[in-house]
Length: 463
Ligand SMILES: Cc1ncc(COP(=O)(O)O)c(C=O)c1O
Image (cartoon, rainbow, N blue to C red; front, side, top):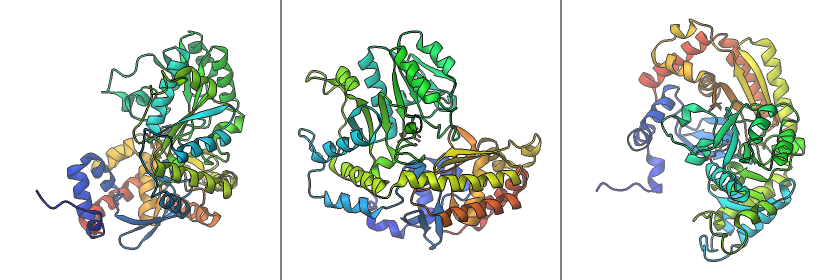
């Protein structure tokens, strides 16, 4: 056996060794995709809204861990809290855990309406799985309604309610009795609810991966009323929108919606620990898992471990102490108006939208014939990942990290840590201005990306 690598070896690994490990022992296709636009940099340090590569270059992070870094990278308050818990038993399932009880207490205080009982797990998809299960057992009904272009995860259950065929194809049969409706369409939702066998409607208050889609005003409130009229539960997936991201602690609060079940993850762990959760009303919980007989029907080995809970407690403390929801609302308005100014100036921008610091820029589709003029590998990326060419330009020319949305590759998402400053937002706005001034068409982006690819292939540095 070859010598195993340790944490001490990490600082000595070169960029090409890391690439090689990814290509050979992880996901070769993903490694190639990242490499095409020179995204596979070797980042070695992160703090707040910044990360640094091995050459000491500093980058501004506007991706924010897909919404997991609301309080920034390596938040020292959270790291310290995890450290303070390090002598406590981390895993002791045949007992009760003070840290888990405390975090559940806090979640009941900050979530809207009558949400009360929390189940802790380790990821967003797992939180969705738990929410679907509790909805079925609490109502005794099978059917789950979800939205086209919605995203709830890629495990079997969560994939079954994720509204994009690309991710579902090849994995059938998925969960039976799952139906899709148009996001924002209450008439269609009501038609489905009328069947009387619907356990729950699961919905994102703003579709994140769908392309930062804000539904029509009043949509969520109407959905809640309809669900209750027909005996179904409302599951609100706040995995990406939660913890201040959209300008309120939870996005459904913009409409005064009180879900029966809420899914949480991402920033709940403060960007330090993987933490997921679903929280249900006392009524739903008791119907599902009330009493000794049913209390172990849904469990998780690592869910609620002490260090994860310590991270969650410190994260909530930081978010409330720093009033991050209010900050996201204020800075989000500032960024959105800056983006609107750009939209008026550059025809390539079709729309800018979002709420708080969950914003998206949608690009015009390239005119017919343009794609044909972009050669080879870049052509492939252009068709599937239009916005990633813009992201590539921002990264390689301005050291700003962004990405496209999973269900709508024509949209760039902007979801920086909520601790970002106005000056840092200006850096992004200036970089975007430069990007669009220099690349007035997709052909321009295609050529710029082609140059990046050539540089990456033939002139790339090892670190
Ligand atoms: C709204 C929403 N739900 C669920 C998930 C799945 O979370 P995870 O990737 O932690 O499984 C995501 C991830 O992006 C999400 O945005």
